[in-house]
Length: 77
Image (cartoon, rainbow, N blue to C red; front, side, top):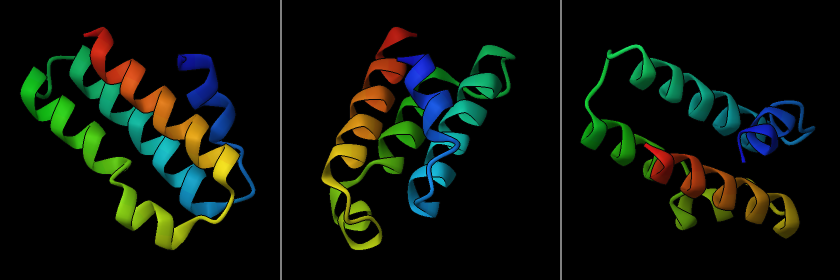
């Protein structure tokens, strides 16, 4: 799933690429001990809140890929 997030950073949809970059940044910060596990999970889940994501992105397949990857990476910790 980490590979999917990295691939999504190059998405032509700015809402998707921004969230993928943020997810990778949060993961790095968590791994470096700069945030707690609960803070990490909360921030990751905030990235893919359906209402905001639906407003900003119209490509259902890409949204689904992002949500799936973020949830998977957030649960790995």
